[in-house]
Length: 333
Image (cartoon, rainbow, N blue to C red):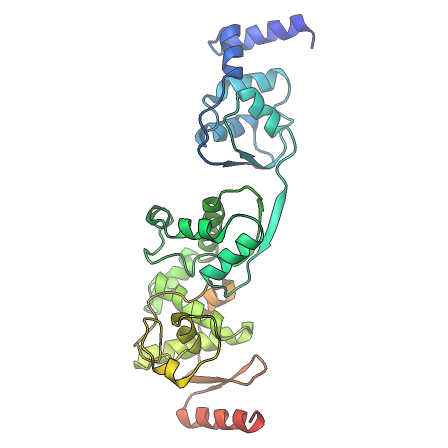
């Protein structure tokens, strides 16, 4: 486009928008609003440029979308935007924003969060992947505003940081990463599962807590509905759950060895000494455990014992359970 044609096009578009050419030029060069913390802007594949500009304005990095939309159309850059994620770390003028989103998006860094990790273990994984310090993540997780915004229990986010594979630009704010994990949890723990929990007499939080116990007790997908059934059957009978992982969670230190004194020591999470479920989750359960907690196997089992190979023997009576324990001890003295 020649300079004269560009000028005529600029005048025509500016006039249609109720702007003078000088006013449009000033608007395009004016620095954007202050950026207190990095803002992650996502451009979805197939998103129209006007929608992209509106998103930029909603996220506080663009004052007014119209001048940017007009200029992008005039210069035919409205179809040159790359989908992906862009981190805005300083105030940018509309022209600088346009150059940013028509350039390559920020590279993504992948972090894998396995099932059954505690909040502190998840935070350690995120920090090791380079997304920030453990302290910065814990600061967000202890923020009452964050917990309230995400409709999380005031005690914390344990149980609600969904285990999955995530990809973020390295400079993504810690709060955004944690929100993404909670939102992923909401996608998996659907209203249908909440209704199933209610049919079992469980609140949503109790169902997540039960799922965390299931996750901690067995790595086997086929056993999870059985473990859930054992715990629910014991709850209905008023029996203590007697789950070893709850004792470990409530105990200080990382030693995984349990003693008889540990089993007798009262803590809020020790299901040998407290009735019912612990006050909250002891880990972050995956999809299979969440589903098992609200769809237990139709069995009358009340006990299970580890075989030492990752599987368990399930029993409906104490006599059968004691026999299974004795059998295991004979084979593994």
